[in-house]
Image (cartoon, rainbow, N blue to C red; front, side):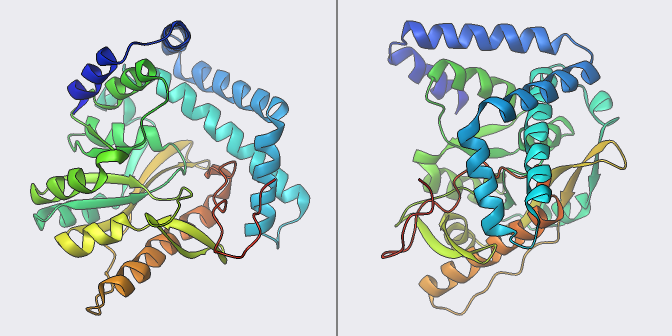
Length: 315
């Protein structure tokens, strides 16, 4: 899969801008990767603080989303949450730059499992595992650490606009056996992986459009949500369980939490079951986000697609 992606880069001629962007990224990643981890994270936090100050559009989207989803919070509380989001994103940048040099022993000093037995039990069933996840905590480090500990998986991702950057990022993601499944090959790749009893992680918390998405509640507001995971799970019999790598401030560690396998709703009406299970998956994500609100990607326009007749929420 990764080799195919690299071949595709070679087929499409890259622009000077794309080559310069890739070079700049590799230089920065290489420089940050040489720093001690604490310094790399501090640099990332500084980048996050700069983004808070400079990226007014993202800041406004984040505050609007928080007001929509958490109206019980004060304006000050919502701002504090959003500042934490920018810091969390900065930390993830620092971690990503150092990821390729992590060993299992080193990473285990600042990452631990919680609920690994749930994942192992789901895997033992032999019908494949669909890890329900989202843009919460350190999602890039999550699958990387899992592969580093001997549990490689596939990742459903969107191709980055710059194919050189896409290949660079995927090379790091796949250092320890992970594979990528691009969204344009979603259904076939996912069903094939389940047939082989593999594990696939799916980020299921981004805005979609019909017919790939259906409307289900997210923080009490209808959100157009990918229905493919529910469709594949119902067809394949694969186990679905939540998995998130979140920062626990009290421990000063990341914790890779696997929840118990979710019990799918099966009434025999496929369309109804897809909708009901998509709502179940979304409610599960929401529960984790409510627990760690300062670590979710509030700057994403999650409620952009509206049901027919509703006014758009973002300017």
